[in-house]
Amino acid sequence: MVDASGRRLSKAEIAKAAGVRRPAVNNWEKRHADFPRPVDEGDRYEVEAMARWLMRRPIPANVLRPGEPAGSTYGERFARSIGLIPQTENPEPAQTSARAAVRSAADSAWEPPRDLLPNLEKWRGEGGDPESYEELLLVLLHLRCHDPRLWGSLVRAARPAAPLPFGTVLARALVEHQQRYPVVRDAVGNVGLKIWTDRQLAEVVRILEDVCAGERRDVPSTMTRAAVVCRALLDGFATDDRVRGGEFHTPDSIVRLAVRLLAPRPGDRVYDPACGDGAFLAGAAARIEERGGTSRSRSFGGQTMSVRSLRMAALNLAIHNLTTVTELRRGSALREDPSRTGKSDVIFANPPFNMRDWSRRDPTDDPRWRRFGPPPRHNANYGWLQYAVAKLSPRGRAAVLMPNTAAVSANTHEHGIRRKMVEQGVVDCLIMLPEQLFRSTPVPVTLWLLRSRPSDDSHHVLFIDARALGIKVDRKHRVLRPEDIDKITETYEEWRRVGPAYTGDAGFAAVASAATIVDRACSLAASRYVTAEPSSDPYAEEKVRRLPEELQKLHRRAAEVDALVDDRVSEVLR
Image 1 (cartoon, rainbow, N blue to C red):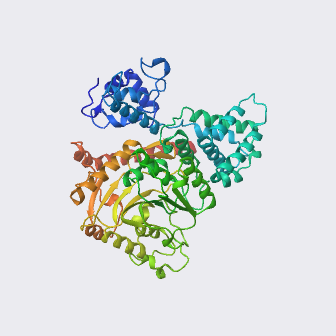
Image 2: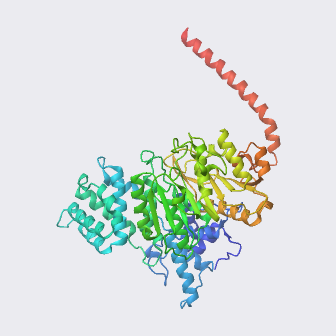
Image 3: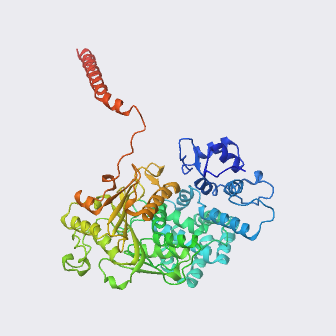
């Protein structure tokens, strides 16, 4: 057994625990961008992060060990080797429970292949309407989740030798399915099957069946493969030509971060006043189910601005089996009577940034803004922030995404609101996130954590500068890795435990009092408070001193090169 008492392992120890050769671990690191990073100078890796990653790596059938069932993962073997799962041929009930927990973790960590959406897009064809195609895919996922008999008939009809035209079979199946599940009716009505050939439609069904095959029946509905595929597809749909009414899809890595930070519990009322396609609501439900809870009453509420977003949110939440516990409505939360929705324990929001003409009347005449002040008519950012605070229950907490500029806006109204929010202690934490997390906008964002009331009288704020975290998955897109989310979450949790006495983390996190923030023009940019890490290079000062001298040398060399070029050009022109 590998000794994991220090919770960190070298590559050689990882290879031994996973039952592979050292070069295999090197290959995993080279080929997979999400492979965990070493956590110390000894090139060692954190045990939990490695276990989570290995849970996604199935062991090929030809190298399974005696007693390992088909479908086992390297994560299970790794966990057994380091003692997370007792090694016994006749496990006691407690050991069986531990084994089941690891299997559940394997399912929740499962990810669809990265080429899933490109493969599906290939069969959409150039003439297929993207929005109609997206809704078709989600309808098919819903059918697979909730009508196994009908889905089985579709899979059989999609075989090349099937006797009937597949488009006809699919059309009949959708009519039958929407009669049983009215939640898909609007989406089905928006899908025109005739723009696709029988072969295109059949291939789409086969691809979805292949990627969801092997799905376990005993995992929570938010962790099924269909639910994970749904979240991956929504992430992939979010390109800049598919933004709906200013509502941006919230990337899954940001959803997971915000949900970890607010940690919704069973019984919490969860609300999203700008829910878009329902990503935050689905993420909150998954968090509750991961922790063994369920929601049996209408504890989830969301509001969205466009008809299409409403359809997509309804489909997304239905695939996650949240139809009976979620109340969705269309409309602008800022324009409607706020009393229509009661107080909430947890609020998530990714509202449209810098929205104009957001109020039906002059904001200065609106009683909702008496506490902190009326937002400017031309920009709703501070309307959303105030709305979130106003809708919180006494123990409530909120996570709201805002453009970085909102934290430093010099607008008189916004500056005054920001100062009052800080002085009254409703601002808990600001996290500057890396660029390029959104596929649909390049705007850098900050996650604001707000509270209904301060936990102490000192009104301190935690600032986290996480701009250096994340990893690029392609030229224009970055994601937060599990270890990035862990680092941010652990920092925030320590701050919540320690309070104003928290000393921070050089280059990453710092705490400032309300008085300090006011002295700095009420700037809430984390970069203003987080100090850079001291250099570990003992010769750094000497190197900096030499820089001007090196720069002068380079200038002289550049001048010499310019003179030489002029001479050569003159010779050519003679």
